Amino acid sequence: GAEDLALLEKLLGLPKGNKYGVQGERKVPVLQTNNGPGLTGLMTIAAHLVKQAKKDQLLGSTAEEKAVVQQWLEYRVTRVDGESSKEDTRIVLKDLNIHLEDKVYLAGNIFTLADILMYYGLHHVMV
Image 1: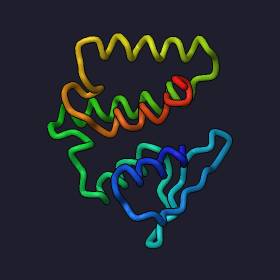
Image 2: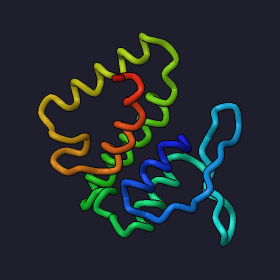
Image 3: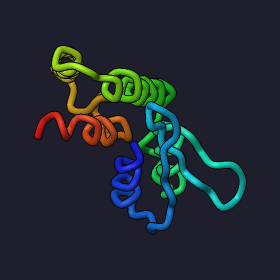
Image 4: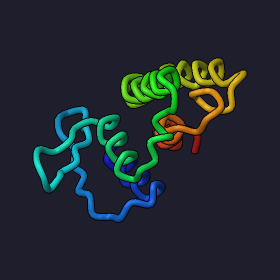
């Protein structure tokens, strides 16, 4: 959640200073902005940071790549962040293994935001 966004911000080379918080039972990340309402949700804030860093290629280049990146970001939020048991975790890891059998990265042959956030989401499990 919020700590993943701070890591992403550092990885993207953005200056520190964004204020992250969480809201609700599910601890949904929130970014306080100086101009206008805050941004809510991991995917929304992460995409905003990528655009702020002018690294739009991390969101995919073609329409298909963009859709695949979006798909894996949704998977991260709904399945990885929602994991509650060892069985859930086992299913997530099995899904990823099958998907990555013939690919280098989640969106095929390019490194994207989906790879970064999936890594952050699964790192604690792998450790």
